[in-house]
Length: 222
Image 1: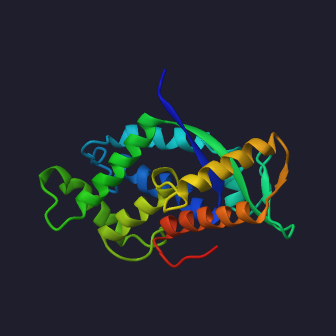
Image 2 (image 1 turned 180 degrees about the vertical axis):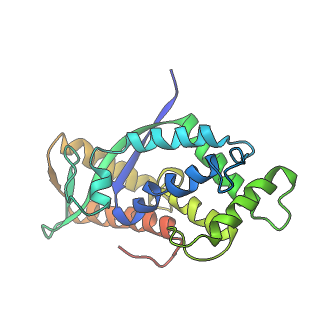
């Protein structure tokens, strides 16, 4: 059986929207390059077909309804508790998702390959990937900001941050993880669970960490 890990995931639209956009156009284009006569773009250490399959398995692990929540067509996640602050205001849905270690490793290898490809001298093995990223950077109306190949690579790494970057970092990270794990156990299938002040502050730190990783903005607040 594949080895899995459980990710404690606050379902934050601002941190998940790019993750949901990664397939089209980035992974789709790398599998089917802009040049119709070319084969899939080689990605050293992370074959693009395998990366794409891993990506879809991770997305399938997200709670049902996540795309609708991120797309703002729904505001609830069935079966996923909403955390409510001491003032009675809703804060965030909190889910525990199970993902395969092998899939996370493939996505991490893909992110590393993107970083390698945009170095000043990427080397022969990464030249095709570098050219593909450069072509993508020139295309209008794509989700990443205007820029160059490094812009596309940076956007993709940030898009993957909800599954590659733990929001439980810093001196309080371990304690925050334990606190929110206990909150999830306390929820026990309920639609909403009220937090005390300490729990709400832990949620705020975790949400901020996620948004900062996903946006690349160290000053981002939620």
